[in-house]
Length: 104
Image (tube, rainbow, N blue to C red; front, side, top):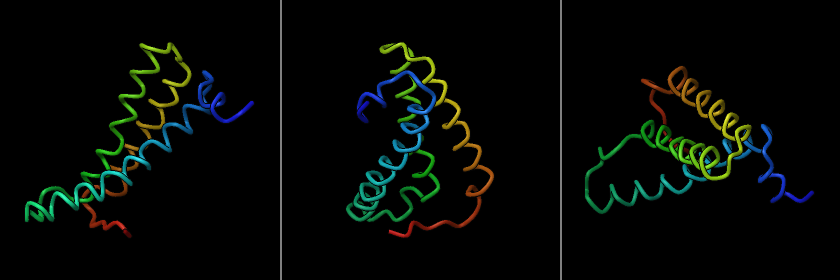
C-alpha cells in the first residue's frame, strides 16, 4: 500500500495525519503572506500571530466537509473533527492571551 492510497483510505489514522499536516502547511503559507501584506500596507497591527495560528485550522473544517459530502469518508471526517477540536482547545489553553512569536 503506497502513501497516496493510505491517505485516501477511510481510516482514523489517515484523518489524523491529514488533520495535523494541513494546519502546518497552511501556517507555512500564511505567515509570509501576512508579513508581506503588513509590509506592503505599512499596517503592523494587521493581525497578530495568535490569529494566524487560529486561521491555520480553518482548512481542516473545509476538508471535513469535503470528506463528509463529496467522498463519504466518515471515519476520516471524524478524525479531522477530533483533531481540529483538540487544536482549538490547546490554542485557547496555552497560547491565547500569551505573547507568542514565530521563530521564522
